[in-house]
Image 1 (spheres, rainbow, N blue to C red):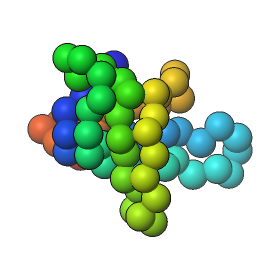
Image 2 (spheres, one colour):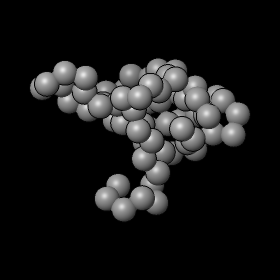
Image 3 (cartoon, rainbow, N blue to C red):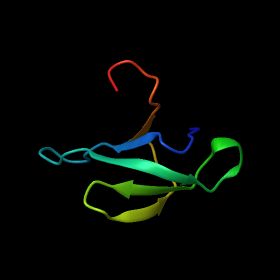
Image 4 (cartoon, one colour):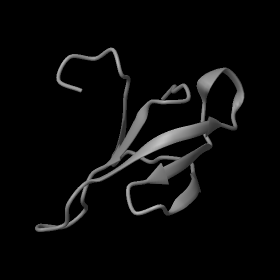
Length: 65
């Protein structure tokens, strides 16, 4: 998984009825775009995350973004 600042990190819900969490990657802390990432969510919460298999990085240039 590789990301740059400004990409979105989507964490899919793990159980039925749980919504996806979408945040903006504000800082890439790993080398060459690798995790961990500092992520800011819409509610203002910030976290340092090393995304697991339930996460996807969306790049601004992707269609449907």
